[in-house]
Length: 168
Ligand SMILES: Cc1cc2nc3c(=O)[nH]c(=O)nc-3n(C[C@H](O)[C@H](O)[C@H](O)COP(=O)(O)O)c2cc1C
Image (cartoon, rainbow, N blue to C red; front, top):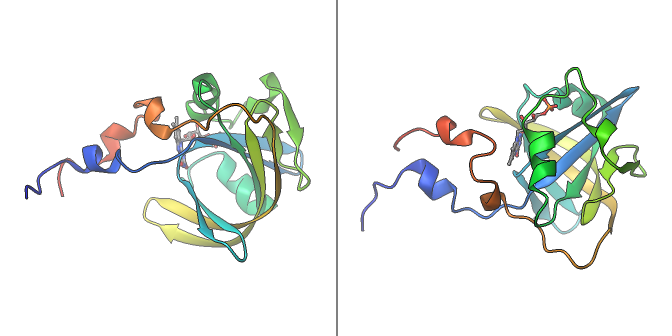
């Protein structure tokens, strides 16, 4: 068996969905596209979000201790681009979108196929990211007929191809 395929080509074969993480803290609102979200427990109902601590949204997440996950559907690449290829440091990315607050206050995209309302229960360093273990405390399906989007459909929209080591 050969063992010389690149980390990029191998890791791109992991299946991920695509999401917009929305957060509100004080008068500030933020949001970013994320692929690294996965369920990790049934009871309690926990998901893990892996977030780059350099993001403008990061201090809002730690300050609020809560966020909402808007689950994107197939064909919503432009939403992924809007939230994932520019920083919200000096703009409100939700200003041009239809959104509503979840019970915890975090913004949810009205055009998402579903959302999860999450409370952060623990943070843990994970290399160049921070892992936010979060309890899902609510949510709703917003449209029944659209399948979830896959990270693979975004190609190299996040520019991450350059971040993988060329070999193991
Ligand atoms: C397809 C795609 C997937 C992404 N996945 C993640 C992710 O899982 N975690 C993360 O921290 N950033 C991820 N990003 C990067 C952020 O969305 C991006 O850097 C964003 O502009 C940060 O916004 P902010 O600075 O306003 O918080 C992804 C971007 C794209 C385009």
